[in-house]
Image (tube, rainbow, N blue to C red; front, top):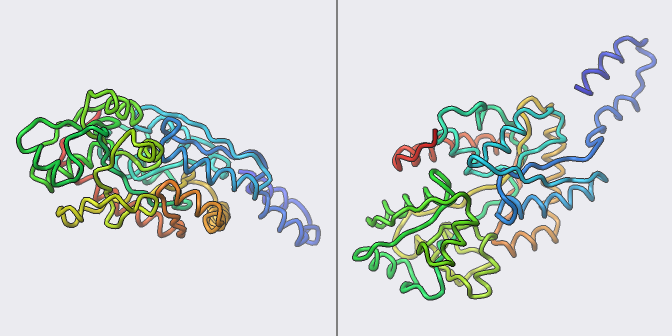
Length: 325
């Protein structure tokens, strides 16, 4: 809207008064005020951690505060709607991940927005595997041992709720392992982990940053990571595929999105700045400590990946039977 107003004002002036420096100033106006990154989950999870790491560096680069705003609720839909309806000028961004953008469209049939069409992909920040964790005193230390126990006993796993990535990973595991781990939904990933530590459930598929400290302290034990390759931060943890469940490879992306009508030049500026930050050595080290791998890409490539993942995960949702009205 700012750009439109400036163009209209320029049209009312004699051509000779529209100098080159004025045109350059228009293009470099962003950001002209603090930038908000809305995280549609509670503090402490992967989205929150990555947003804060990148937000700090972007704020230093822009000379403007970057405010991280946690707006959890309805599986991420509360925060997503806030961004979908925000001014499309680049100053309000969504910290998205595959769970909110590629899954919620299939899970929630009556959303007031489209998780794919109503957002402009800006940049993927990182890919980040999930890790299957259990209590330190659990009777299994590997996927084969878990499969053996689950064949004769009731084994439960918790999630952030029906249709969440944590839930669907369990359904994918059940299919691959020919077992039936019992799903116990919670109101968020943090309560599920509390339930695990309290002995109410046996397992949780958790993002690496949300459990990294507990794994290092020995409070929780890792059974396997969900990506095809081992996590750089925890190379000692085997992958699910290594345990014999071939082709099991889930390595979700986390990225920034803007309202869909955000000007293309603003999206390109954001993309270039984010990709520059992702090449910073401090960022690479911080991401690595969380088990994340920086994944700079173009807005077009990000959009294509989102559309592909929406089709893939929608099929997983249908197979699971999960649905939230």
